[in-house]
Every structure is written in structure tokens, then in C-alpha cells.
Length: 183
Image (tube, rainbow, N blue to C red; front, side, top):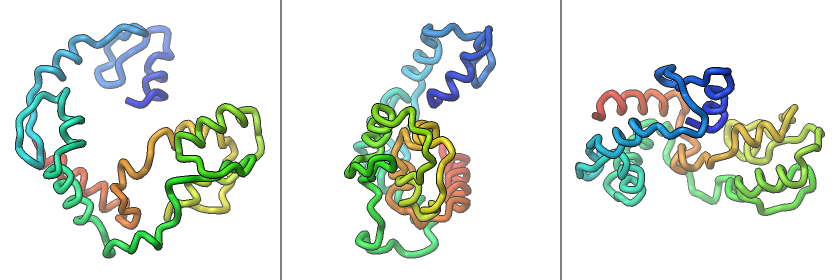
């Protein structure tokens, strides 16, 4: 869960789990879930190595066969051949839309704006969204600070694996098909 979703689950007088709706206590750990993650075995879809769920994320980050497996899925939903990277707009550094200070990565822009512009109500264009193929470079966010914190606490590159031309609906269908096929 992301922090805002967890916070919503903890808001009621009697907080509940976002999955099973059982009672939660703020600050208490889900020891039964931790134990289940530590003891449930799974198989890497790339190299077929067996491991516990708790080790899967670090394994997937370093398994070249898993990376190839992911890229096959991306290629399956790509409508056009990959373009030369020189044609992509800069999606790595962004200017501050308030003070025009330059060369912030996504995290840096979020931190900069939180520190220096949290009270600025001026409507501005999100430079991160404007750099995306689906972004509108003229759209001014009514609450840029909230937008930043909700939409840009992670990098889109994590999810699109560098292919911004893949059709979102096709990509979602591919993910669903692969999730049904995967164990």
C-alpha cells in the first residue's frame, strides 16, 4: 500500500486493514503477514529459481533472465518500434515551476517544493507531467503541492521500463494476462 491509502485505513476511530477489514492498531506490526512472507515460497519467472517471497524483490532487481521476461511483456504491448533515445524529451531533470531553479530529479523537485514553496498557491504546470507523451504542457494544477505528493513520489521509469510509447490499455491487458498465467 502507498502511504495515503494506509492513512485512509487508519483514519476511522477503529482502523481497519485495507484488504481483510480486520482491526488495526496504529504502530503495531503485522507479524502474521511478515511470517507468511518469510515462509511462502515462489519461483522467479525468469530463471525459475525458488525463493521466499521476502527475497523476491532483491532477486528480481539483479536477475537478468527476469529482466528479459519483463522486456518480453513490454515488447508485446508496444505498438511502434522503440525510437532513438535522442527523440525523447528530458524526463530525468526538471525545473521548479515556481522559481525556475533547474536540474531537479523527481524526488529533488518534490523535496525542493515542499521546503520552499509549500504555501505558494499559484497555479503552475507540472514539469514532470508535461514531459510525458500523455502530458498537457498547458495544464495548470489547481493544487500543485498535493499533485506532486500524490503523483510523483515514484519514478514513472519504474513502471514503463523506458518505453513511453506502449499503449496503456494494451499494457494493462498484458499485465492481467501475465498475472493469470504466472503462479
